[in-house]
Length: 443
Image (cartoon, rainbow, N blue to C red; front, side):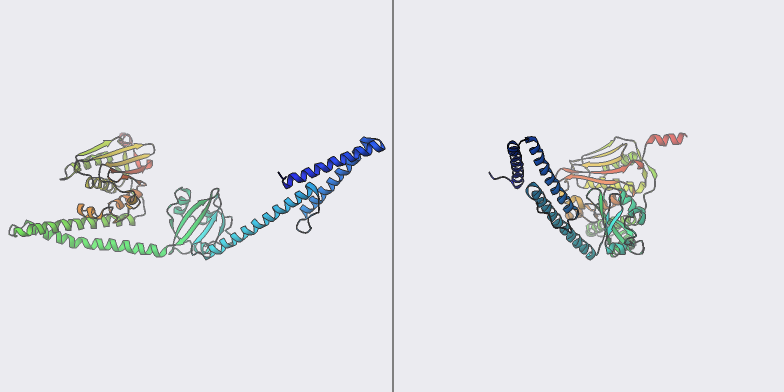
């Protein structure tokens, strides 16, 4: 089996050393005083190695200007190894420089701004669009903390959080008329990449859409009220022919459905237009849920079993009207999509982390592909069934926006054919123990 280059070099070096030792011994035996011959020979060999070491060290220091030394044995193998490592290093260095130049050209050509942040959120690099959108200056803002340059509270809260799935919308520092979407992407050892995009056109289109929906819904209220009034009068008219009864009742049903849709649109527009958090009025959730259960049982059609599990007497701080809308939307959805022989369980719980409102049903369930979109306005899992039950497709969207105003989140678990569970999580700062109310009243 052939030896590797390194093993061959060391074998040659050891063989040469053994040969020198043998020659020194032989010389000592011939001319006398073997020890002196061996010491002198080894001293000469050591001087040669020191000379090789000096030449190698000098070449390593002056590698850019001097040629590599012509050394034999292990030293030559070391020189060859250093040359290979240096050439590999030079290749990777050129490759990295090339990649960095391509990255800079690519980010410069991008219409979006790109900012590279250190783990301490210092600005390491940014491209030209980022400088234009955020008013950053090269050489001046490098090394500055991004929090010191963008002090908008929404942006600071966004960076301090852990969920970067959705971008934060900010006003441009140099032009308040411009809206920017900033999204953070984590990579490496705590580093972040900020992507900045001008979304002014989208924001204005969304504002126009919301204004149009709100204005159109408001304008529809008056004619709907008139139509409903005339329909009620005609239905109650004893002189009206009996044949007109079914058509008029159907028109009344459709008018009522349109009125519900208009009211939902107005409620959703109001929630979307409000960026503030909900007020902190004391809301008796257990009492509200008890009344809702009685209302469900009073309906002409409801599941066979409607159970209310009040595992906590905690109260909520928020808007009573909005919380009523949240709870009733989820409960009425469960009623609509649960068969008559099914069951619904309504739960109210609380602990040190906050409070939870939960509605569990044994209804038709929701397929997994629909779950990410069920809170979108007008999105319906089964359009045909939704029209039949009179749904507007806005209920869960209203729930989502109202929960956001209360600092809460909606969690949905569902399996098609096996029912659904909707859970509203409220933060601890929005919960209030009933004992605190009693103590406050006593004080």
